[in-house]
Length: 301
Image (cartoon, rainbow, N blue to C red; front, side, top):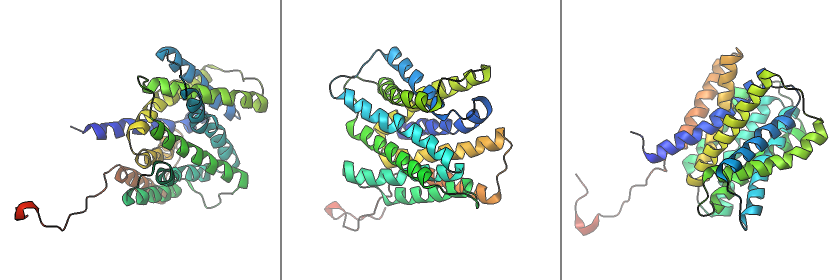
C-alpha cells in the first residue's frame, strides 16, 4: 500500500498529465487561431464555478495575494505560454517550459531559504535533456520574442509555485477556494487582452463546446485544484519536476491520437525524462554517520 506522501505525489502528477492533453484537444476540437480566447475559457468559467461552489471569498491581505498568485500562475502565464508557442516551434517552447524546476530550485534557495537536494537538481537537468530529445527538431527556428515569452512564463509560474508554498492558505480555506480565487483573478486579467487582440468570441460548434468543457472542468478546475494542493504540501523543486509530465503526455497523446511517430531517440528521451521525474520525487539519500554509536555499543548486527 503506497504511503500518504507517495499517494499525494501520484495525485498531483495527474494535473500535468491532464495538461498534456491540451495540444490534442486544441488541434482536434477547438477553433483555430484563438489562443487568448482559449486561455480565457480555461480560466474564468472554472474560477467562477469554484468560487460559487465553495462560497468563499478572500479576506484582508488575501485579496492582493490571490491577485498576485492568479497573475503569476494564470493571468500572465497563459498568454505568455501561447505567445511562446505561436512564435516558436512547439519543441522549443516545451523545452523552455521544462526548465521551470531549475528556476524553482533557485527561488527556493533565495525566497524560502531552503536547500535543494543535489539529486533533485540533477533530475531537473536530466528531465530537460530528456524533453529536448523528445520534442526538439534539427530545423527548429528561434525567435527572440518567443524565447523571452517562454522564459518569462516559466519564471512567473515558478515564482507562483514558491509563493504558494511560502504563503500557505488562510485558516479554514480549502484548496478548491484558493484555486477558484486564482483562476478568477487570472481570467479577469486575460479577458480584456483577449477581446482587444482577437475580437468577439468565435461561433462554437458541438466539438468546440466539448473541448472547452474538457479544458475548463477537467484540465483547469480539477487539475489546478490537485496541482495547488500538491504545491502547498510538497517541496517546490519536487512538485515542479512533475510538470515534465505535461510535454511527455502531449507527445504520447500525439502518438496515440494523431498517429505521430516517435523515433528511437525520442523514445530514449521520453524514458530519460520520465525516469528523472520519478527520481526527483525520492527523498535525499541519507549520509551514514561515521561517529561511534551511543553507549559504546557495536554497530555490527
